[in-house]
Image (tube, rainbow, N blue to C red; front, side):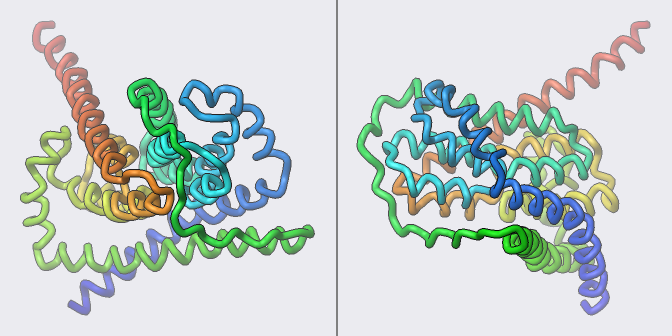
Length: 313
């Protein structure tokens, strides 16, 4: 047990350092951008196209903040706007697919997933879901009634206070990462040493096979589902290095987790917005399963084609 804890701590600190080198500078830059004309310029740029998703121009604010920062920033912005139930639900679905884009895309690239795949899947799902819900749902025209509203952040003024505030946010991001990733890695190591992971992999095998992946991807999927993309990536990095998870399985796992990750947290945080969260959860799960299965089948066919050509050639 002591050996497992030590090994897990070692991997945990290593993973935190690996991901921290991405998260700290990205968080720092984005926090500084909040105090420049960049974000307002982006919001002004995309406001005219909000009508495609059935949203008012003001809805560009939570979309931009949610994608540049995180879901919490997007929700905070929604709570300041007068929107209909339909608009809030569309924003919730779009933000559940596409948020914290800079950090989570950087993490995906660190694992080995191509940039265009991450952006195409995340932004594609966000845009497509917004358009479809707008066209299919004809209700929700009443004004949204929000629940508990979190306190707004204190306004920071002056060059040094802004810089210090950005450093604090970046440091807090690393701390939050460490308190989840390090214990998670210890648990994973104990499960490996006790052979529990092998049992878990067998239990998850039917699902992972249906999604086109091998059994050794199950831990990555479970971690991402519970803890999110960035934290799930910690387990994924270890799996690639130690368990021989293939590039194909890593890509398929990330495609699944892009659509459906941190299912408990990312579902419950939308409760204060007064929208039905069960449909939100079901949409994410169904889309994740269908999309991953389709990509897995296409990938399998593409792999089989060269073998057939070589056989008949």
